[in-house]
Length: 407
Image (cartoon, rainbow, N blue to C red; front, side, top):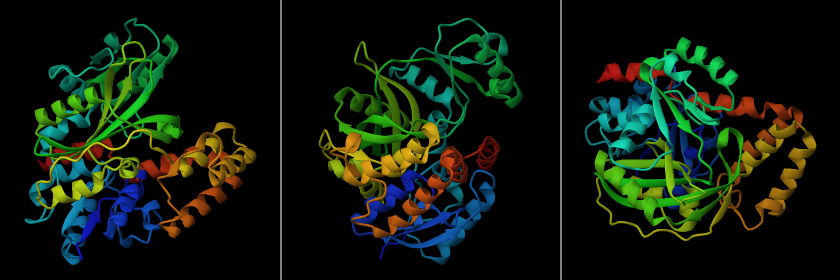
């Protein structure tokens, strides 16, 4: 059996990658700093290997991964979150013959940081909101129309992103950014765009687009994540994604967020994720992103996949429960959301569960039951749980500085 190792197990993307690969007949192993990570509770997971957090101890994390690859005769290493950046920096230390689909480190550097991404989109003429890159408190304090967004150079799951509605917020944030040393690296100031949020996911083979999927967010959850989404087709977005991938000679998975401008109907790109992101809406729409990434990792050159069906509505029930709990801190809201989920009623009508598919993977009941119990005891703990989960897989600025020393 093919030995497949996923780079972490706490994120929603890891959980969904396990499902997509499992339904295709594969079994996977994980490394995780959390012994009770979300993805371990699956019939498709053979083993979970303990590892230090990649964000606080990248050297220890990499050492553990290399040890697991050797001991377990791993054939393919699949980065499912920010560890892709880490492995790109450590590419020269990975075993010869290991299957992994990674762009080179210089390509990662152009999409991993917010200022570098803004510069890249400008250079290759991909639309984005009105954007400035600020390097001083003086420029930051200049008057500009409210509202707008401020973005630190690095951040995961909306961390390091602030909406500014008035000058007092701007002035308070200025001191924090200066203390962090963010202006030295460049702070992005971006005008707010009006329109629906959509996300595009793609897999490239050395700059050639071979799979793409796009969906629209219907209901937002904690941190701007998705509770409900629906698949769409956007030929212009596909063309822009192809342009970006070709310019970077990208190899592997690459995802973007954009706002579909309400006035012009044009996509305004504002965020990049150089990795696989929540692939189950794509899977249920007929696009196998995880399987395609696996084939590219093995050195195959698959033909381009046709785009998937439009209008496939999927839900992340766990995120819906957390959002309901966090909204007012009431147990009754959690129970009401649970009833809607179990009945596929209300805003869940016509949707398919993508995150914890109990019908095909009954072990999902464990994290769902645990979370439900926690939320009923302390509803306002939802945001703390989300923050803790993000910490287990995100890269800190210190870790990023360390990765650059590896090069």
